[in-house]
Length: 83
Image (cartoon, rainbow, N blue to C red; front, top):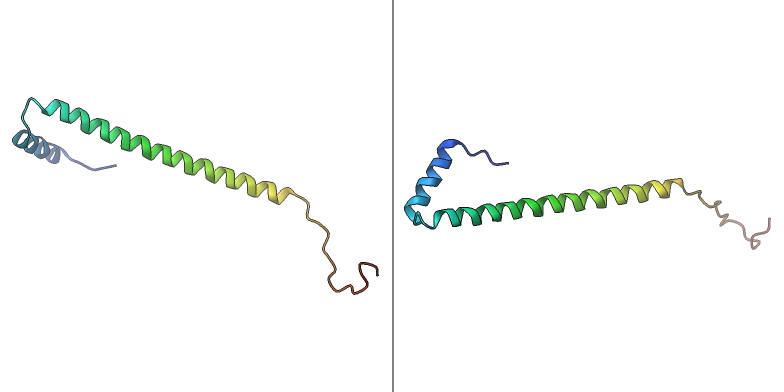
């Protein structure tokens, strides 16, 4: 998903140590991990919902193709249905 190399991770770790107290770092890292896990779950749920809806629409379209069509109506007949 993201292409983060070792140097970027190292830079983030150094900045985190500078701006966040080392005692709080594990708790913050845990919260960030939970946040990204929740974002991933939401994305997977959305993808699943879209896939299910697309399947339902496709199945409904297939059912409509299989139904026999009614006989064509002759609108040019001016005698009330009798020829």
